[in-house]
Image (cartoon, rainbow, N blue to C red; front, top):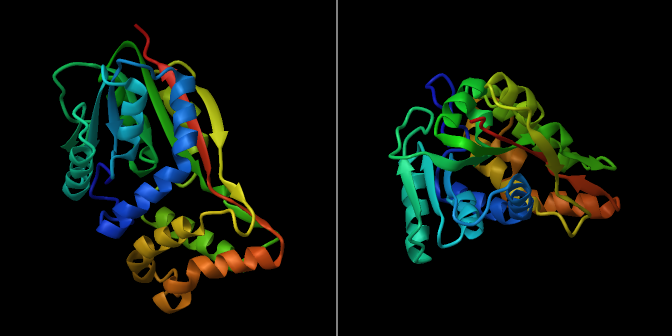
Length: 275
């Protein structure tokens, strides 16, 4: 999703390779998001608003939990993302998931929702407290608000794998330089409280794997999407990144040292709007 202001740029963009990368990332993070939603209380028959729906994967997951009697509305500021997600819904013949273009913090809807959800989206809002406060306005009394955000300081290797560490550093520096809050997951508790919600419940998940077991291609794809902005900001160059070999170089370094790598932490928070 794009940020809700022109003062920040969404560095990853919405190209076709990036939307495909989002779906690969969704496959890796999907089990964590499903566990979060189910633990938070997302259930059959709910009407759900998905904030920053991107390629549509979180909306499709929410629909699986809400069932045929539920309804999911996914909203994204990118027309390309909305068209992509809509085409995926049509190809799957899913009728109770709809996608709309816009910023849900300022949009109006015909009726309130039972839940508002989002994954890796508040990190791009210039004022996440205001965003959560506005989004909670779309909830019925007692409705759920559930967000899952990164703690990028969790991303590391042991023993040190230089190429992986470089890629992690490029990702964090570029996103931070373009205004994203790369550790917003750790801020979720305070954000919910400042937005007037009851103190949230929290959980944290992360991918961990050895040389053959980690999805290096997802990190490499992120670097590919960020590369134009990385070069503009003089954080790195295409020659230094050497994208065609990046994933395999990371993999081989970790194998060579019998090491492990960790993804960013995915911190989930959930609370209910007071009646």
